[in-house]
Each structure stands twice: as C-alpha cells, then as structure tokens.
Length: 141
Image 1 (cartoon, rainbow, N blue to C red):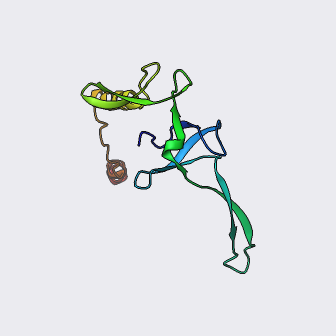
Image 2 (cartoon, rainbow, N blue to C red):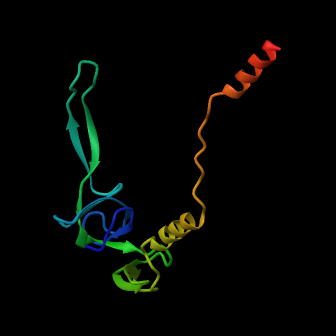
C-alpha cells in the first residue's frame, strides 16, 4: 500500500470520484484508507448519561486503497508512486515529475541541526544561603 498518513489523495472511482482530501487513517491489513470529508456515514448515538442528548453523528468511513491516488505536492497531479533510493534509503517519489514525496529531507536536517548544537548546560537552582550568612555576620559586628 503506497498511501500513508497525512498524504493528499484523489479519489479515482466510486461515488466520490474526482474529490481530494487528506488521509486521516490507514489500515494496511484490510487495504483501506480513511479520507477526511469523503465517504461520510451517519450514525445514531444514544445518550449514555442523564444530561446528554441523543444525536446523529457523521463519521468518515474507509475507502479501498486502490480507489485513491496520491497527489504530488510539487506538480499537483495525481500520480502513481515510484520508489527511488536516496542516501541508501528507499523513498516514495512522484511517477511524473520525480520529486520525493516523503518528508525525509526535513527530518534529516532537524537531526543534523541537533547534533551540531552543544547540549544545554543544566543549571541547578540553589537556595540563597550565601546572602543569609553575610547578613548574620553583619549583625554580629
């Protein structure tokens, strides 16, 4: 399954064909994805406490992963995923423009930035005993 969480996808078949949305849940075992604002089902929710009110709740239901295509963030077109190797890691890339879809480049830059910085020094807050000893010496004189 080439669709991951937070990907923008285009629905290519079914009742919602042509609509785009963000993936909010995936289920690789069942081969389904849940897309925000697409395939909304209504469910009656019963009041469980005395002060609650029964209501009808709208929840997004899963779609089959074969019915969606990932939208490339650079070219903006729905594309098939091709896998390419960058720095020894297999990454997802756009089949049309070749741009990397995974946000791995941003993650690696954060890691290198943390390594370059010196670790923050831990400063322990101490009680002001030194001042209190000086004041008692002044009182004694």
